[in-house]
Amino acid sequence: MCASSTTTGSPVNRLLAVCALVGTLLMAAPAPAAEPIAIAIRNYTFVPAEITVPRGSEIRWTNEDATVHSILAVNKSFHSPGLDTADSFTMRFDEPGEFVYVCGLHPHMTGKIRVQ
Image 1: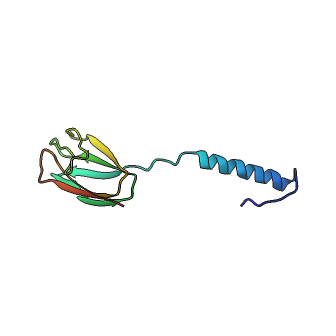
Image 2: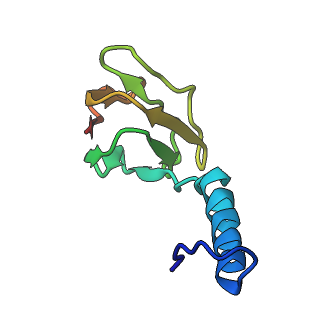
């Protein structure tokens, strides 16, 4: 823990200078990016089908089926290209709300993302 002192050139002042420098470096360093939250496309379903995430979260859908799928927001606010086996699509959600989506090729496949 860093403490304050008024003695110039003392070991305490040198410690304070080091603490201030470390604090400045830590504040300037970018926060490590969080891994995207995974949603699998498996057996013609989204797994999990519903999820709640904080603002700024990234969601990554990965197709685990042998069939091409896509991600299409019902309100058309986002969509992916066709995703072949092992392909992924990542989307960042900065605004709060509910986002209902379907597979554009198989509309019976549905999912929902709640952003808080």
